[in-house]
Length: 119
Image 1 (spheres, rainbow, N blue to C red):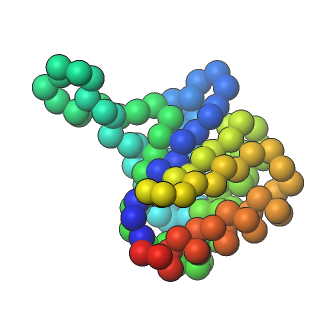
Image 2: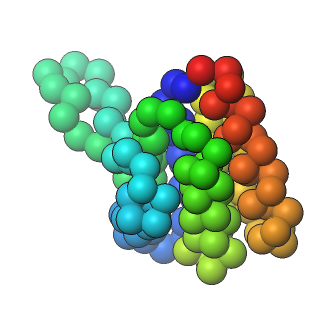
């Protein structure tokens, strides 16, 4: 599976929400997640920064890990830590918003499994 990119739409302090989701994914879902590297501004010499509201998940997501990621992201949005979280691959995306948790978790888990089988 290619890296998954998570875009966090959080009110107030998006950096804090992004850090919180990163910690929950690493601890709760046990995935290799990190802040996304920032694009270098035109004319700059280095791309050493990181974007505030974007994370990258690396590696494979077997069924149990996909379920854990779905649970963490769904709970994160349901608690109001973010308005929505959009997860993207190279050519597809899914957005988790404030719909009932059971439906969101099931949809997200199925989407993650579908994209795992592509990689």
